[in-house]
Each structure stands twice: as structure tokens, then as C-alpha cells.
Amino acid sequence: MRVSFLKEGEERSYFDEYDTSYDDDCEQDTDSKNTVLENTLSQESIVRTQQVLSEFLQKMGYGYARVEVLSGDFVMPGEDAGVSTVFNIRGENLGALIGRKNQTLISLQYLLRLMVFGQVDDYVPIIVDVNGTRQKRFRELKGLALRMADQVIAKKMPFALEPMSPFDRRIVHMVLADHPKVTTQSVGAGESRKVIVLLRS
Image (cartoon, rainbow, N blue to C red; front, side):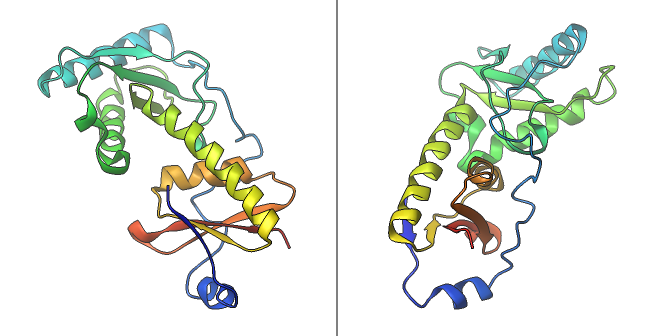
């Protein structure tokens, strides 16, 4: 992943150009750290949601894919932490279900939530994953965030990560939320929005 230090003297103009508030990328929930998800849907609702997703995949031409409910080793950031049930789609050649920056996967998740709304008795945000891609991404970004924090501390200057999706930015914010020496801010707009790691004042 590409990262870059801000040039000396560039910090003020760089941050003044954008809204750098601790914004909607980061959920300011003190319980958001590495929260383990629990299957809080009833068994009946889980079975129904699996059925709806499987039927939808069949119509999309992915009838060979298997839908499983992930156990407690799945970790997610943000508003869905600790209250979601994760439906992981397993199979070969499923890259098209993920899409660029997880956009297809996010859309699939949104559609599934709409399809099961009103069909299940309990409302819990649903997370859709493909072959554990989002969990792998979480681990990668967690490692990156911690390495960048070390770099910022060592060099005593802000560090800019490459533009990320809102989901990825939330992970970086979450991982470093309670770091004693660094903090994070999001800058930019749209697909150019990125995270800056900087020393706490």
C-alpha cells in the first residue's frame, strides 16, 4: 500500500484545504476496539437469511457458492461492531462479488438487508463477506496502521495513507483511536479521501 510523508512546511496548507474533523469515518464508540461479533439473530432468522442470500446468488449464476455464518473470530469496526451476524460466501471465482474497493460486496450487503427486512422477527445489521475478504483486510489495515504510527513517532511528522474506502478508513481510525501518542484525521473528498496519522498535540 502506498503511503507518503507530508513535506516540511506543508502541514498547515494541506490540512486547511479540507475538513479534518474526526468525522463520520470514525465511530467514536469506546467499545469499538476489536469487537468480536456474536450471532445475535435467532436461528430461524439466520436460516431464512441464508436461504434468501443463497437464492439470490443462484439467480446471479453463483449457485455453487456456499453461505456460512461466521463464528466469533470475525472482527468488524464501526456501527455494526458487536451486533451483526456475518454471512460469508465461500467458493471459487467469486472476485466479481467483491468488486473494486469492496463496492460490489457492499451493494450486495445492502440488497440482502432490504430483501430480508420484514421477513425476520429480529432486526440486526447483516454483514456479507466473501471468502473472509473483509476480515483479511481488517488484519492488513491493522498492521499498516500500527506500522505507520511507529513511523510518525520516529520521524515526528504526519503520515498520509493512500485514498481508501469509508470502511477501510474506519478501520484505521478504530485501530489508532486509543493510541497514546498518535491520532488520525480524514482529509479529501470522494475517492480521494484519505487518512492522516499524526502526533497527538
